[in-house]
Image 1 (cartoon, rainbow over the protein chains, first blue to last red):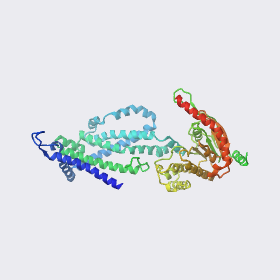
Image 2: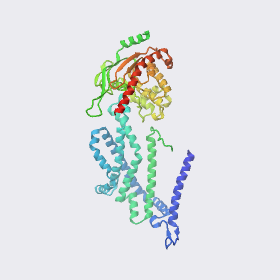
Image 3: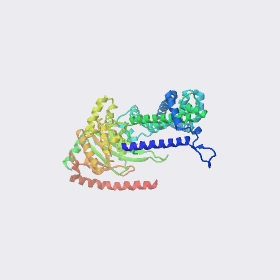
Image 4: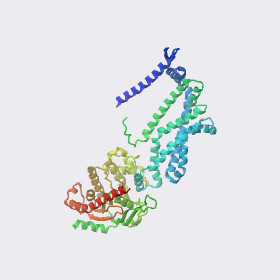
Length: 270
Length: 285
């Protein structure tokens, strides 16, 4: 098992080394092939593709000088706010709709309509309403997170096993106790199972919002770099963003593992 | 009739009826609007004395579980009366514990939490409820598994937890819907013995639904046969004059065989009828 894990890790690293190596060679070695081009040329022109060395150097410098921390902090704050507000709204409304069939039926077409709308088009509206600060990004993230959590919680409450419910009733539970011991845990389970997606979407909302108009954050950094043809800056921003996402995802996995101990392990072998 | 049968009968007649069904009809609304309602059970009358163990046997789909649900108060009969200790039942049957056929444990609670829940919800202090739950887990032989979640237990172990979950509340009436149905034959016999042990310690009225005639005879004081549905009726009942305590060897008893032959003769016809009806229903659909 452990041996497998190490060899897997080695293979994963190999992929990174090969890709970065190809990039490095393509962007630093000049080819002289008169049959293709009169002048010597790079396969990957560093003006458009930068070089791995430059990107790592820039990323390191940003972290070292501390310039990036502020932007990372802003993006993290927006992501967290979007996640918690969206999740709270999704849980409450999902719960409410699942328990009141009439309400769900009345709002059904509107929920579908709102969910079908590509959320990016809302970004300018939110910027107009809430300004260029963090709240317009939070709002964008909330519209993404809300629907994921809402649908999951709605499903979770609706799909409580009728036997479990009958058993709870026969054990003497009141309506309130049913909520606490049956519906609530079931809804939370479904919410947690969508945790990865929800957190991911909160981040997407934040970064897209920043990209479309702001004065801080990772999306803003990438947009700035793009505006001055600073490809190194763009790649460096993407690198930071990826590392950030992986860290958050690891954290979510750890939380999930703790909260859902009672669930059977997925059938797929790791 | 043997003296044992008479002894049981006299005892049963003297005690107040734990459950009394009188001319119960249970109907379900038709899925098609305007269609006639589907009558699952009709004219069902059955008395269960306090402390009596009654098994209902019938072909698949005859409405055994429906009758059980009516006794539990989960279904309301269209006609007839359900009385519990002489009082007409309205709403859920608070005197009854119900062991379901399907999985009914709370998957997010450990075994001990699942058992303790019945006490938790009536406000028993947490420590006390846990201690009592552990006692019950010990009684069903699961002391070592108290902190496991249901998915970590085998099917038989889950049934044991379910049994403890129901019994910890000391219900006056125990309703069981093919509780050991999904288990393998050996586990079923062991569970049957466990049930008899627990029951003999504190005799409750038991209504036990099963499709397994052997299981019914081995466990019950009285076996009730239901005919094939729809509009299934109770078509016969037999007392089981095998003395208690019974153990696993009861199936070797000559009385057991005699009774099995007799009841099976009546049941066989209904089972065949039941299959024919379900087949024609499939063709009609």
